[in-house]
Image (cartoon, one colour):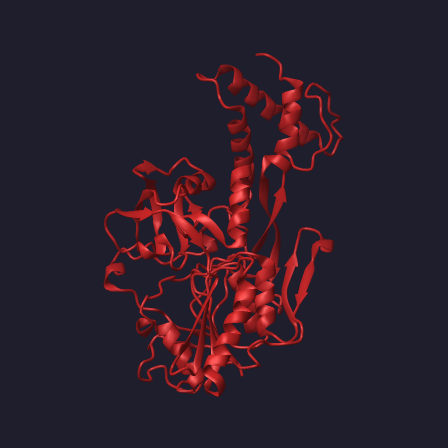
Length: 452
């Protein structure tokens, strides 16, 4: 076996370990007492294996692909949300957070080697084609996904506008996999959609994601609804169901929009000096009107920050089912021309100090949405959340891990029991003392108390 090339080994160290600035000679002798001696030995092992692959593999491998795969493997071993972003993926992510990108319009994660849909984005090709939260995608254009990383699978789903792709989907409640054909399009994320309900007495605001426009769009929508309704307006419904999250600063801004004072979120890194607290500023864009926040099993991360802050401050009532339980913060660390890494760097806590990681937000009032007949059946498995993801960060020692909940939301507002309950709550036709068997309300409501 030939010895590793020194220049090539230098490249490995500089790209494989972000922040490593000391170039090591692979033949040097390590002191047994050196605090880094073990990691250096492991790097030697990595170098030996890499050189063996480069010299003896049946076909000449792509060096760049080898290194990217090694980095991906290292980060994937940490938790489901840490990953390497190639230069192209890094650019795509930057475009996405600005609110416009090309693709199908679904937020996905990887579970047991299969792509799992966290939530389809409203009014996108995937949403119009009927893709649902918790769907499992096993094939893309009849090619298996098993063996691909999440980034590779996403790359295959993206492509030129107006080109078709066929997803093979496994859905709970259906006996056989089925194909969904979708035509790719430019995905423009309208992060906030709003309308008036109940004869213009209730303002309904749907926040589908937290991108760079979310806070600004929310402010505009609230002002518009207040003008349209005038004095008839009795309160706001903030719908965070199936909102997979997004930018932390936008979640803080949205919570600040609804709070007049107090803490919003606490983030804690590995070291004490990395602890940060976000505070609300004076001013509530609703004018201190009543607020109901809707969540379900598809509400994750930034959505849980907002719901947790509203709940802890008793600013409003949280209605729905348990949220996803993603209580970790990812930091994007650029690597120059080599892309970036998305690294989990902190956990976040609600103002009262609750950790959401692998536990989620429990609503003040639990309203279970009935599934349609096609989703019901003996094989209907219990919905999952962060706690079901392989390699997830464990809940705090004092916390009990709990799975998530259903993420199904009917397209027809009149069939949406969670929405209808929220409207009734704001109109005063249901209160803390009202029976959950009131006309038009779901019998499955579990009352947890309604904050004033």
